Length: 378
Figure 1: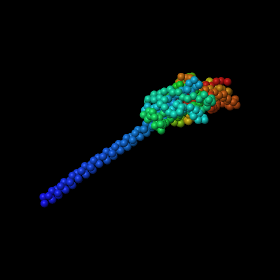
Figure 2: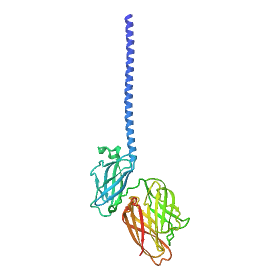
Figure 3: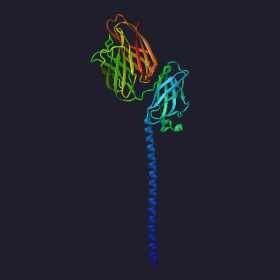
Figure 4: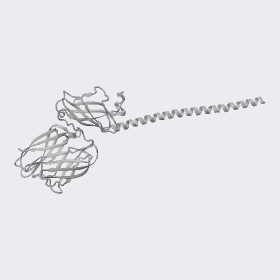
């Protein structure tokens, strides 16, 4: 009996130990599985965070490299670029395209770390040169870049993250290219139109003492506070107006302009913006003819001005030569055009006409700081 009892006791001890071992094994397996699961979740979380960070960098760098100016001549072929992003950017390739396709690239072939630009930094870089391109041929400059944090020395890993900006220019423009960098924030004026009397060229009295302007292009959307100064042969005046830009609407600027007559020198400024062009000179021949309005005709695709529209007020018929000079920030000539305009003698009384004058070379609208329209007598 005592032996039998011991056997039963021993059997009970084995059951307890077995259950304990099983519990330990279960806990260990649970811990291992939890660790594996947490490791997988951590890895997944890290991968997701990395993907989100890459997308954020791509968004922050998109269209944030600015082409300030191009100096393209036989001796010099350079482009100036500026980083407008809040993060560093790395330029990886510069391409020159012609009407028949890719002409050349730097580097050729492939991509490389050409330069790294910190926030707000600019650099002047060499661009490919086309010795066989025809005079006046349309060329396209394309610059590839990437957020510097996404750049890898193994360039294959970076290609999918790259983006580019591009701009068109005319092959013969380089001989008189502007070297004026763009203001950090700027707006473009393409219409200046004071309300004047047809015969005398004087600005009308109130409520028509107005200069109309238009600003369809800017690199910073917002409300611009305009100040328009007018200086003429017999006095000067100033007017103010606020308007949301960019806009294709005419902006009405009213000021103490009454009775001011040509030649009119109109200067436009706006707090927080560089105004391009800032100065407009409207020609005048007393008692005969005057310029009463000017409009730059440009393409939204390449931002090139190829024609200028001029409104003339006539008091005396005749043949006149009207010339257009476009000047950069240093008042260097970068664009020119002229046209002989005839008002037949059988036109009686006062009249006004609009003439479109072609330029000898196209000019980037953002390079123009001054517009001068001059009338020459017959």
